[in-house]
Length: 51
Image: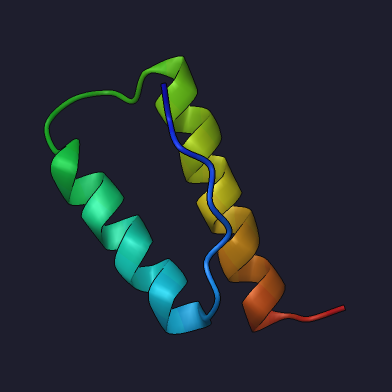
Protein backbone atom coordinates (compact mmCIF):
# COMPACT_ATOMS: atom_id res chain seq x y z
CA UNK A 1 0.00 0.00 0.00
CA UNK A 2 1.27 3.47 -0.85
CA UNK A 3 2.23 5.89 1.88
CA UNK A 4 0.53 9.27 1.58
CA UNK A 5 2.65 12.21 2.63
CA UNK A 6 2.39 15.85 1.61
CA UNK A 7 5.83 17.29 0.77
CA UNK A 8 6.92 20.70 2.12
CA UNK A 9 8.50 22.39 -0.90
CA UNK A 10 8.46 22.35 -4.69
CA UNK A 11 12.02 20.96 -4.69
CA UNK A 12 10.99 18.18 -2.34
CA UNK A 13 7.99 17.36 -4.52
CA UNK A 14 10.19 17.26 -7.63
CA UNK A 15 12.67 14.95 -5.91
CA UNK A 16 9.89 12.65 -4.69
CA UNK A 17 8.30 12.49 -8.16
CA UNK A 18 11.64 11.63 -9.76
CA UNK A 19 12.45 8.97 -7.17
CA UNK A 20 8.93 7.55 -7.43
CA UNK A 21 9.15 7.19 -11.20
CA UNK A 22 12.73 5.85 -11.22
CA UNK A 23 11.70 3.13 -8.78
CA UNK A 24 8.96 2.09 -11.20
CA UNK A 25 10.81 2.51 -14.50
CA UNK A 26 9.84 0.12 -17.24
CA UNK A 27 6.40 -0.81 -16.00
CA UNK A 28 2.93 0.62 -15.66
CA UNK A 29 1.82 1.99 -12.32
CA UNK A 30 -0.46 -0.13 -10.16
CA UNK A 31 -3.74 1.56 -9.18
CA UNK A 32 -2.45 2.50 -5.70
CA UNK A 33 0.74 3.88 -7.24
CA UNK A 34 -1.29 5.92 -9.72
CA UNK A 35 -3.17 7.50 -6.80
CA UNK A 36 0.11 8.34 -5.04
CA UNK A 37 1.56 9.79 -8.26
CA UNK A 38 -1.52 11.97 -8.77
CA UNK A 39 -1.21 13.22 -5.17
CA UNK A 40 2.40 14.18 -5.80
CA UNK A 41 1.50 15.98 -9.03
CA UNK A 42 -1.30 17.84 -7.23
CA UNK A 43 1.12 18.89 -4.48
CA UNK A 44 3.60 20.07 -7.13
CA UNK A 45 0.91 22.09 -8.90
CA UNK A 46 -0.24 23.62 -5.60
CA UNK A 47 3.30 24.83 -4.85
CA UNK A 48 3.79 26.11 -8.40
CA UNK A 49 0.46 27.96 -8.47
CA UNK A 50 -0.66 28.75 -4.94
CA UNK A 51 -4.30 29.68 -4.72
